[in-house]
Amino acid sequence: MEIKKGIGVSPGVVICRAFVLDTEEFPIPERHVDAAAAKGELERLRQAVVDSKRDVVLLRDRMADQIGDETAAIFDFHLRMLDDKVMLRRVRDVVRDQGVTAEHAVATVFRDYAKEYLNMPQFWAERVKDVHDIQKRLLRNLIGQSRATLDHLDRDVALLAHDLTPSQTASLDRSHVLGLATDAGGRTSHTAIVAHALGIPAVVGLKDVTLSVQPGQTVIIDGNRGVVVIDPDEATIAEHRHYVRRLAEMERQLVALRDLPAVTRDGHEITLMGNIEFPQEAATVLEKGGAGIGLYRTEYLYLGSESEPTEQQHYDAYCQAIALAAGRPVVIRTLDLGADKYTQDRALVPERNPMLGLRSIRYCLRNIPLFKTQIRAVLRAALTGPVSLLFPLITNLMELRQAKMIVRDVIEDLEEEGVEFMADVPIGMMVEVPSAALMCDAFAREVDFFSIGTNDLVQYTLAVDRGNERVASLYTAAHPAVLRLIKDVVRAGQRHDVSVSLCGEIASDPEFTLLLLGLGLRVFSIAPPAIPEIKRIIRSVTLEQAMLIARKAMTFDSDKQVTSYLRDQTRRLVPDAF
Ligand code: PEP
Ligand code: MG
Image (tube, rainbow, N blue to C red; front, side):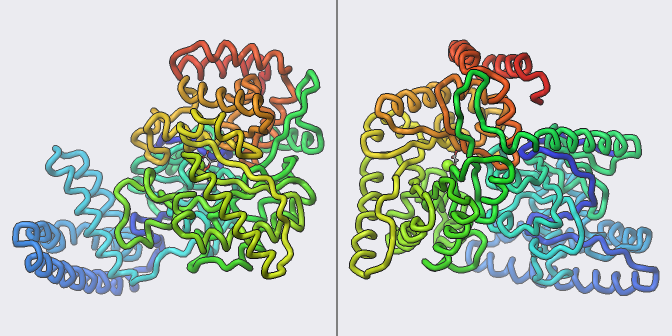
């Protein structure tokens, strides 16, 4: 049994067999073979080694021609390893002794090798990349080119991967993936957000969990405590089963809140909406007791498909979400592509710093036809229900004005074509970069609403990559600088009579609810599974209590003080909150 600590990003606990994806997205098979078949496996292994050596020689020669012998010498290490008798014997022994496929044996032996290298002095530790490379080459030659398709699994699994691309997360077979654990990722990385939205227990930022787990092994993924237990013993399984039953009981109690309003004990009504990535999720938001869709992240339309969606596909998706929201408001955010989503894979020259690059509204303003296609669909779909339009990552007034001009152009086009649409759609902007927060008075004169995106606001204020596990401990919305920006935006909204909502992940975190209420926020959009819990906290406190807590929290000058104060106060007022 081994226990790994990461970052719990989606609550819930699951006990399940592991399905492991290697770093190149190959699934590592766990198929067992009998003694007769083992001979065939050894022959497949021999052939894969021959093929791999041939590949490496070709690569080495090409590099030598293009760059020179020195760089090409790196491949000599690969060749030596592929010829290493000890390594080959270890793989063959695993096939024979454990009765498993050659792929499984390669994965097992190379996992051990990688660990051994990582424990060596630096020069050798750096060679771990080469070890991974050789493993991948061998697996590629064994498995062929078949990549993991996560949309067609035939049994329930806990998915373990180095990281998941947005398109992989978008195409997950939700009926069979019961839990998720990744080496990489931070609290608001896309894997974390999608797992939370789908209600799949998840732990990210585990660094090397894929090196420690054998495919098919039992694992416990505890998204509440941010822990993964590999190969748990009977006592640990029993303890977790008990915990799962307790969580289910708490969940049942929360369901009772579904039809009750999100109103504080002193009678202040709060609007609690849900964030969605896929139109079908609009139904989940209502089931959980949400008052509408406060953030529809439409880029997942792109991430789940091979080709660019047509206007009709946009339109159908929006109409579906609007219909499922059954008359409640739906805030459709225009494409937030770029950074780690979509555009890098397709770019001829990937950006050096994509988080600061051509992403989001910037990307749309450089790709006007793509932008107009989406806006046409939104305005047409707005005839079927109450829709607002939200622009992401606005950093200056020019961008906002340009985006609004495109909306006007689209309106003119639709009028000229005689297509039916709704012109009177409220327009808002995300406040998710410091420049927008600092200039919110100027922006407030030109928008109908603000939506504060703390996931990015934290990243850009603190200069901490939201998806990088190595700096995850520095990523916190409790930093006083972030809190001041949030407070300023809320105040500007009040001054200009512009509604302000908050749709970053902290709105789903019970620890922040009192502070956010106390700072003056009255509209939240959160991951659907978190709606009942946040509603319970809202219904357990008075606004006066929340305001006192916020006032005190704003006097601290370190995030640690803020966090521990908020935790204590939340426990004091809502003892069974977490
Ligand atoms: C945010 O940045 O807080 C946000 C809600 O948007 P996303 O997580 O999609 O970047
Ligand atoms: Mg954002």
